[in-house]
Length: 456
Image: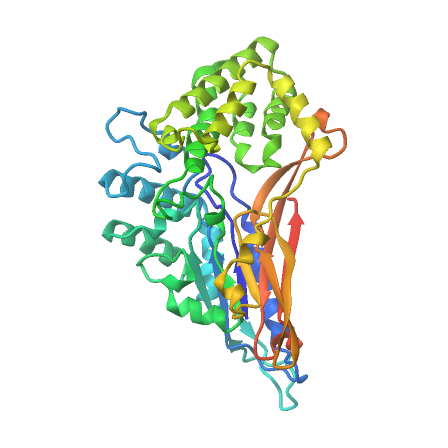
């Protein structure tokens, strides 16, 4: 059995809350149930699984959303950002510090995953002489569980070469009980022949999917380089709550600062201004203070646009992402949050919430075109979905090809559809994963998708 999950984004707690430990406990319980059911074979017999492979398909540790990037300003000794030269010693030191903070903040969650990989971590009832589960047997059958880590755009740092990054990866391997070595965590399957062979056995091709997102992947530099999205995350989403606290903290209730740190969890992303306004309203912020907050937001947006790293993406005589950002910022830097809110509500009502899909990119994957993969799997979008791609005859059998997205494990503050102008958000946690089977497992079933939501 193969399990694929992605986009857990467990962080150090400085920008937003990670998904609760309860999600990991729930997954561990569900994994045992899945393993038991997968042990029932297509011929009606029960044979306990010997192995379970779990693929963590990128954005597992949240390195990007951390205020540790902001400890030093530009020009100060030790100033580091995700776009600093990775060969600089201070770069690896910063990634190491953030990684340790993430692991310390999620010790129990990591331990739950690691326990699954240890001897006796997951066991199943043996089969009796009739080929059925012996539920009364005292002696259980151990199942080997292997955790594999591939990187995405929020944890791409673990793909960087060198002893300093090997040491960082070693800490992650140890904390989670990963099957990976301390060397590069793969970004593409071709970088890991073992993983490529494993997934081929399930007719699965998988990658994080960020390479199809120009805002979060620079195709001219590849995955060992920062993106424009990194700059926006650090200099706007991470920095805004910190600057509000530093400059206006004495005039604002502490609860407002805490809520602003959840900007990264607001869905849809278009509703971010509504989230800010809703928190201003709920905390009774005066119009005079709202103006100060808006002025600070505008100032930071313009500082972001002036960054040399950002300007390097601006192509002369070509409409590009930077031009789009400049247009959006200049359209909003002279109006109030309320005016922006009215625009957001109108757009949401006019065009609906919508969700980006990367299914069209799956049609261009070599594994799809040469029919070697029945399932093309991406993460990244946080939108779990199933899209039929094609059918073809193979050995006189009609075979389907399907695109699947592995969704996310995340805490969300989702804008209510009833009277969105009232800026009401509903908090809940999302847990999604995919399961694939072979050799008659799960009664001959080939795959399943699981998505659940819960609220503490």
